[in-house]
Length: 363
Image 1 (cartoon, one colour):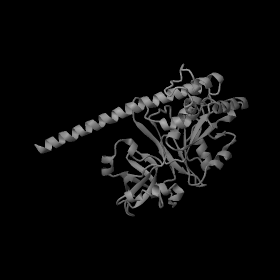
Image 2 (cartoon, rainbow, N blue to C red):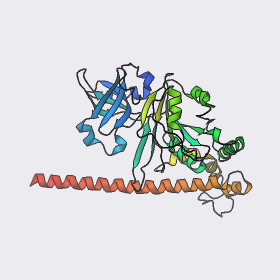
Image 3 (cartoon, rainbow, N blue to C red):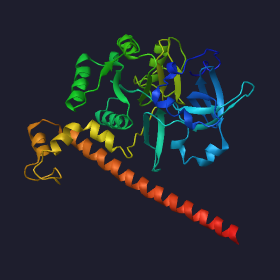
Image 4 (spheres, rainbow, N blue to C red):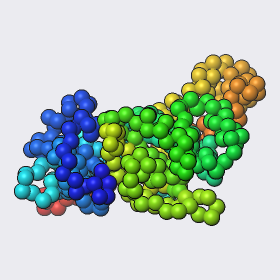
């Protein structure tokens, strides 16, 4: 479901596109909409959808645009939407978005304290890092927090293993496990194809897999290998061995075995906003220790009977792992507080505007 595929007249079943009981239970809320479809790509004011009769394009209804509060409520790749469309219509009209079963989001890049949706209703999120220049344990932990917070299952993919020694690869794998990360790891080379078959065996029909990572780690090249042809544009690596950015939009692609993958542009920032659930899931080892501290309000700094400090001293948890936990929790709490304050100001301003309009109308 990408460039070159949307003209296909292939028909699909909703189940093959990821439909399940979660979404079926919501169809009574769709009103006059007569079609259920999944978002394959979003291009400015148009949406590429795929449903039982193949691909078609749609626009948001004016009523839905007026009622939606910000980008979080608007369709993103992977969403299921309620669409009104007759056979003779060139475009469908989207009247609503079904509640998401899972979501991958981040704090919007820059100073804005808003959520940015990456993808919706994904079963697995594959975090891609290059073994050569891109390996970064703290960034990996950051990704895992947001993936778990959104309800998806993480999978770690280390690429370009042909460019590093076996010793360096083993060292990186050890660092991941030493940080308490137990998620499945696949190591792979797009040049030698080592590991590609292993990754293919993981991708199950009817499931959706979202690839995330920095620019140039080989995501698009890998997806082309999974598709079996050059569906996505790629560029040669630079003189340093690093890849170059090519993906410009998020899109849903159906593989021959029935699995679905979502390619993503490289992301330099992956800020945390309101990710307490993901932090608890990713740092359960530290939180379990914290529950054993002598004092209930222990700050884990210099209190007597602090189980976390004892674990740090004896090497049961690493200092880097603990410091990243503290940093991510503070970041999430800070932005969540700022987000709540912004929402309150927006609501207060909205009420003020309504009262002004009412006063003008009553005069």
